[in-house]
Image 1 (cartoon, rainbow, N blue to C red):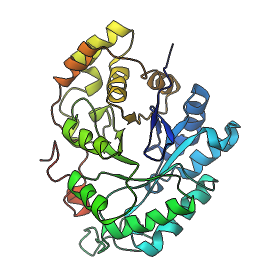
Image 2 (cartoon, rainbow, N blue to C red; image 1 turned 45 degrees about the vertical axis):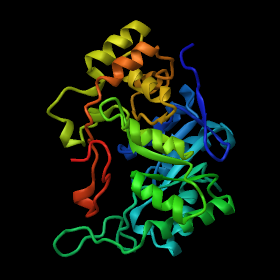
Image 3 (tube, helix red, strand yellow; image 1 turned 120 degrees about the vertical axis):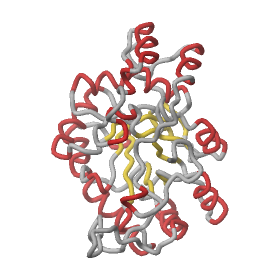
Length: 313
């Protein structure tokens, strides 16, 4: 079988396909890419307000003829809309662009608030990010209302540390359905991921290929994760490539993985990363954890992310 079509369970009882399709970057290419991914068999698509790709995702789904209820859609609340009075209207704007009346999962993209307003990246006269004074707990309480109204079938978080999540769990009533994090064989975050799972919080892996993305300056002066000899060797054993092994590793942890591509052949290949690794394969991959985090927006956002977590410089 080319792909196992693995499905995982959220704490709401909903099923989420283990391989999702990421739509960050390449905004103008996304409608064609999403159309291609749906044709290949994907039924889980990840977007976000800040990506600017919601209209493309919505158009591709509409034109595909696939019933809405057969596709799992995630979008995310951006930092300039953390004020509790802005959360529902931000989701409404996303739903309008998607051409939908609900999303399957609505995530708080980062725990940090920016200054309130229409600018996604508000800057002061020195070019520094204008930070908001909204506590993410208050933002979450507003997100809970979108869950209770049915506009979001599940709500979750992204880029949250265990400490930040612990605050949510102790001060609010809805346990996040998911936390979307940078996780890959070079940043395995085993302790954190086990902790989230123990709380009933599903882990989604963004950037599952690590430094494959050239936007991550930290990963440019080293070999690409997908070319790592261990992953390549395991791939040969299964008739797969290193990228597919990286995806299969994530799924073996019980996580959903969110590869992205605009190349039809790679789109198809990534879906075929849903296959079963052997126990000795997983042992070998455990040994290549470099604890390397490629995405840390702390400096540009003016907020100290990932405190106490693996890969924090």
